[in-house]
Length: 189
Length: 189
Image (cartoon, rainbow over all chains, first blue to last red; front, side):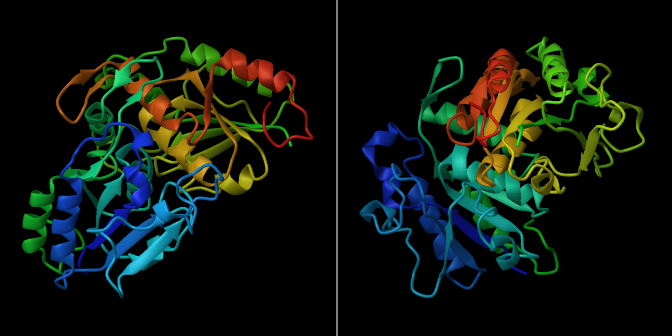
């Protein structure tokens, strides 16, 4: 079976200025490249959306910022999956929807819902590829009060995930790999 | 119900020199303080053990390094739970064993099995406290090749988890909190 593309939480709320300074300004363009490839009949696409139950969140359904970002939004007929947890596997039927496929994951934010989803996917036995330049995050202080840039936060998550829960590749590397994908193998080359 | 203490992967393999330089040299002593408190009738203890299926791992059952570390090993009659995943929830019945309780988590390594377990626990709706000085990890390079010390790796994980998946406290803070624990509240104070 062809690989599934899973996009995490690409909603308007992620552009709210309260998040601070982000990295990977080209992430949406890279998601667009992935979408363009998958939309040409190269496997299922699942657009995962965060439906927050928390009163102070920017993500409750019905709020304007809950909508998908234009440019990477689902087309009519594409699968939309609502989650209430950070991992897209722990509050949905995602594992059943993509059973038997390898997964390509992208979206936001690298060190929260993307990381939790990749960790779950790896633990559940999926062969996972993370498109690191199609994800982004924001700077934050570490536990000891040291200010870490968005790239530093992003880079620590990628190092924690690569080789343990997934492999980390660029969008270009993934597109080259899926071009040569063979249905006889369950994973991407 | 009283809180459950969950200890992650405190096996001899974690002392193998191939891991490199660790942080929190007092972590095992702090786990000992938590164990001492819980062993005086203050809630269930679950010793989680990693049973690797990977041929090159240090953790396959039957190997000498698979055994629990002395000093923090289970006493006869205490629960031992074997996992094959990083998260202690994704290959076990842990969620059922501790249903309705708040959780105190400690063990190794901070940025892999401990972090995956805390992320799952938070997503599954548990009230989770991570005893940060009863965990440890090792230095590693981030994705961009920057060498990060064990404390830096540890500190980034704690910042990612605190307030989103759990609260992060010291062992002393946890012991003070459980001393004043009231069964009428499902969470620690």
